[in-house]
Length: 474
Image (cartoon, rainbow, N blue to C red; front, side, top):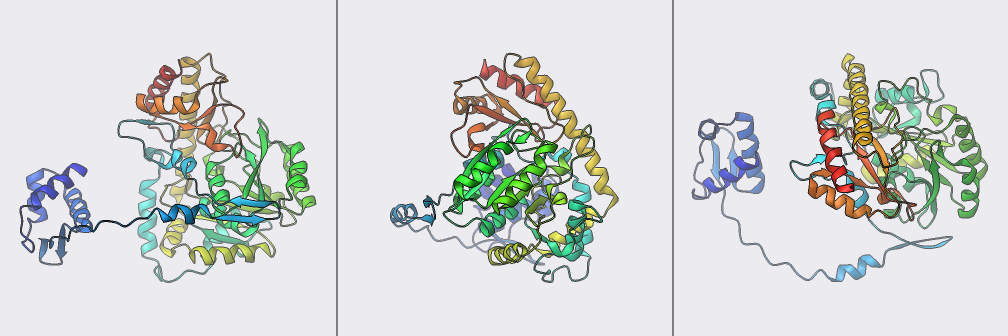
């Protein structure tokens, strides 16, 4: 569509302000494209101010815009922004907004590049037809454009509660807040629970978006190492004692980026140690709907074993559906729920009702479980393909642990390897990968790459991408 927009922009320059432009039908015939493409191109040019549309009359050349005025001197902002700190019991914590780790998985690579960096499944793994049907069904619901309840639609909150602790669990709709995806839920949880200038315990490595939230909030992320069985609980008690932290954020299931699953004997230790420290556990259960076809039964969320309101549970529909279905949930019990609700209301009021209604339509339809089965099969196939390609093309490297859930592999690089150089050279060679250092809250113990297989079109693209990466690493 970009080519069409550029062509129309040039052609419309020939018209005088106020002169009528060719009809959409004429543009379809002239450029040999579909009416939808023409409609989108015209809408983009209208948004740019090139033309104006008048219902029933057509499109007309817009008045020529005045020249852009030169900007002033904004260098004073460097001084003002550098002065921002958060002061706590342990001194001042710089408040910095660092988006590099988030952009490593959100930014689209150049056209023609194979993406091993993406944080969302490939379009072929999305339930686009079911999403369209759900959105259409939501539009027909009475009151869909009315303000929703502050905490979210009760039926959707109830669905999340049953998903987290089961139909007879200790959570119900009253314990759930609907959020604008998992990232929004994590932000709300940290702002509610971790005082500015304080510390929050995080796994090391951990989700780069969590580190960005903590630093932007003026909170110090303190690392607790992860091994093949998840969070090292023998180090957790000392970390609470040394820092005075009252919050731990962890991912017990298919941890990002290592893929680890918290060992059964460590689950109860995490809850016990947190309770003894008088601390909350924020459980980021982002990958439960990204289990692979061969995963078998999954351990329940920590929230399902929590009797005392220690766990604040975070989950989302976004990863398993579409980046734009930003609907998630925060679940908690006790006074903390009021704090979480207050923070969310102050920050964003509520999640738009049409989006909540569409999510409710989707998860209540027969297509939902069909999609989850198809997603599980697609992720399993891609994981196997990437594991086989890495073993074939890079047998001399330490191979990543293959987990039966999640959407990526965590690849260790040889000691002393130039991680940033590898990432840059791989991109020049045609494959985008995520650098490992952005997942560490402190100095990384060694170089790594995070390789997403979910963002690829399939085995053929994975094979080619690993071949290109191997050429760089050799």
